[in-house]
Image 1: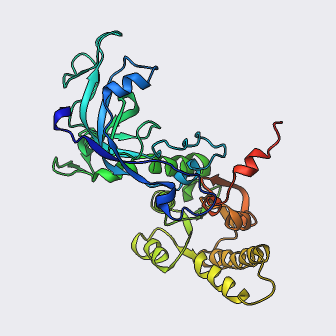
Image 2: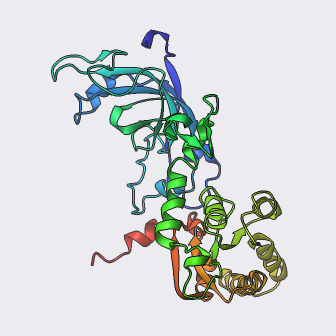
Image 3: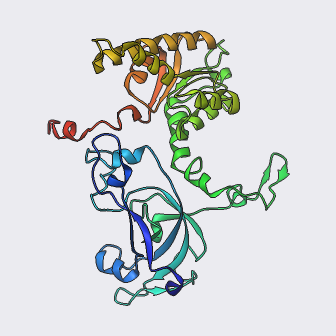
Length: 360
């Protein structure tokens, strides 16, 4: 198999840690051409699990996620930072092009397509990789345990009937969907909304109370936010207020997906605030922040009036900053808040702040 593979492939490595915007991208994430990984190099550089099955995966799709900005920083997080010089971490979908089994701790790795003795994969299988091993490179040699086979729609449905009819075998899902709603994006939306926010259908919202609950979703047009809006609206019957930036995103949520009753265009508001202070003496960042927060509070009041609610029963926050702070003032008693992300501060250098934290 290796004789039919190219000798070189493209690799994206982290060259520098950004302290603000990633501009230009080529300085921080340059693309290089390198020899494709081989089992000989892998066995020499890896001491742990050296006897387990390895698979060579050809990447078909890469996922670009806001969380990657945090991994480029050296600040402490739920995952360790990507080391300088290492392949950029990121979820992928790929095809298995070679499999290596080690028959004994002392023998050489042997390429094979036989899955009767060891392993669950075969050459040609499509797999998803959400591990820290492969990342952004055309070919990656990874442990078999670190990838998951992408199942067909018929297999996912258990070959059962769907809405009264059999599932046609020709119906199949596009591969990128396994990086979105059927990947970590969908899992994040699912557990954040259902487990943390715990929406109640109208008939369960309280004795004698048949009114739907009201939820506010920030970054509502994003990968996670758009799923949250749709599930909240169409599954739980919630009143949904989305927050997005720009008329295209707002129209997509309200007119195309029809998953938001009201959409707040925060970018339009911010542009108006910044335009009003241009050329004035009081143009420091703190003053602008306060004015944005005040205007956002007005938009929240208008949105609640439009949906006929006194406050929000739930908030699914992906942004942080004033959008989170101001919404907290508008929560009803016994409300629930899912803190999923803080994209408003992703370009802020948190390294110095984390280093200043007390060891206690």
